[in-house]
Image 1 (cartoon, each protein chain N blue to C red):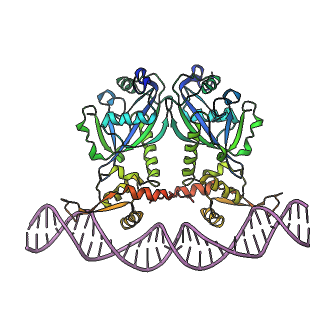
Image 2: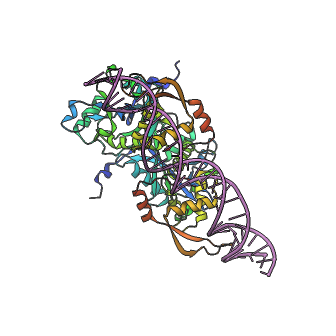
Image 3: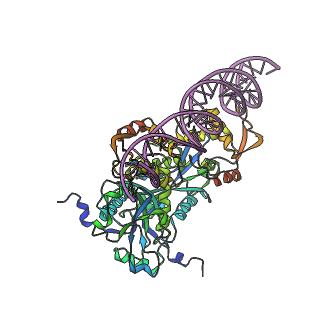
Length: 251
Length: 251
DNA sequence: TTTGGATAGTGTAAATTTGACACAAAGCTA
DNA sequence: TAGCTTTGTGTCAAATTTACACTATCCAAA
């Protein structure tokens, strides 16, 4: 008897899919993990698409998003937020799209609603070439993406906007950084997400005053310039802070 | 040949529904338009539910939400915002829920994803008793709602939170007020949505400095106290303001 | 007509936050 | 050891936020 007996008879729901905008940060700019659909689509439209799949009838939406992420990257327990539902009846236009859908077991004629999620991943935890399943996946800088398959470009824009708003309310950016990071890296991260320059000194002053960083007695090594001090995110301090109702992490 | 030939064969999609959180403001508190499902459910669970319905295969999600709103209230061109998708596979528990679903032509066995929207309505534009279709609909103060059918209570909470965040970025509250309103009414509206008291003088100073209100040379009449001046929302000034990138309407 | 009840409308001072701005220190490399 | 690169730091002026109390105006009831 397995854990979830329902799973035995579980079927893919032909009408509902989940797409994931998997954000990473290469310490310079915001990136997204995209699937290259290959030659099959090159003559018709964009090769790149968001990872996604149909959902099973016995899983809820968050589970489905986590599954898609797990299947692609092997990562679990990742920060995940819903962007919303997308579903123009004519969102699938091209022959190439139909071929692609067949290849992932979806029914190309069906009208599909997709529920989009974004996730925040520490890029160093996942290198595409390490996964056999995802040999066609790769990190692409957000600003270089001009088009995507289906309505995925629209979804990406919506995800960026949600992230931008969310980070003003909750310091979720730490999910994109390694455990130890420098203030400059955090600074560049905020600039990437908010898509505007932030004054260095003012940024540091403000983030330090929040008192949710633990300063480590440790410096960067091997950089060809003055090494930076390293910091950790302080979960406990953050919890204390929010329990007072504080929700202004904006710049 | 009609505009959209697909419409001829349009069918209800048994897997996807739309639910609407229709917010109103009775000049005292925030309210929501709910459907009373009647005796059929009284022995089993909450009678009250959000208005909603399955979507047609040929309409997009926003259209479906507008349709639900229109069918219930006759209102068109209403401010509308997506809350998100909800869809636990086991969100329909009770026999009464199945009965109810049958009565709105939904398939009770199917796994249904629902896409929730919230809308902002000027309450005076719609009095439930005026509509024959919606003889079982009524405005209920948000703070008095303790439970709802299905997962609608969860949806309502999410909608409230979205609204709270949104009003800090865009002055959408005016959609809940009549064309002419007083600063005190606007003040109470913000307090209702943000769910916290706001200092009267500070509120007035801040909202006036935004310069998106037109002061009318007209007073309230028939109130048993000093009558208030009336104001209108100034759409043009608002557009000017936002075109500079301004997005801080928060309190 | 007078009085009492209710809400509208108004200003200021202190504290906090924001925004603009420049240079010395530390490590690496050639 | 000289030069390159990035880190790390302080101040001042302006703007914003917070806390706070009394008079004015209308209606209703006596």
